[in-house]
Image (tube, rainbow, N blue to C red; front, side, top):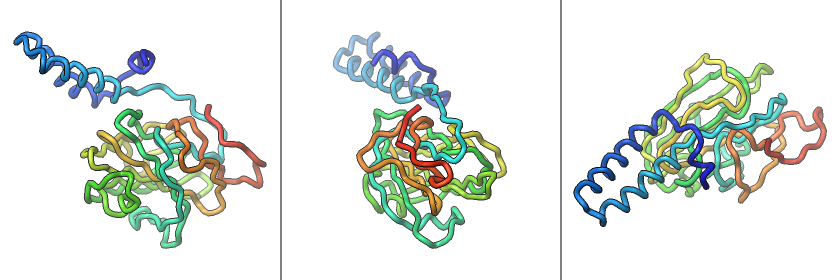
Length: 230
């Protein structure tokens, strides 16, 4: 647990930490113990929530890496959001649910160039719901690899999350496992696999963003491989 606090903090999180810490300090000055302890816990939780730990990113080409920490909530066939430009044929969609205790930094699943960054306002249904992919507020990102294949991934707000933050822009080159955004405070990230990719994870499996290998793009060329974390 201590190791989770002794890591870098996301820049965007410092103001929230400062607000909770300031309120905690004022409660201590006024002697309001009933208020001090809940605020003290919130301060510690905000430090924990906005942690930004380093990750050992697999460098092998042809792999898709988990774009987020969390639990694989579902694996299904679904038509990608229209704004991704991936067509109207169903693709394998892997949905990762991020609880308020998970690291909320999102990372690119592979290297390439950003083709699309499209924000769409929407509802704030529970991120656990299947229809959250279609109805919730979201940020859809399409990344084009050097081999021409396009990988789609989507940041989805949940009923607690009210703010999607995206760092990348169209035409920007990114590396595998590079930070591309975060969501406050509890959310979901969907990854759409291109045709022919082999999925290496299953529902109920925990992901480590930037480390867990979720799929391989050329399974025949690369040979069999088990799901691994680096």
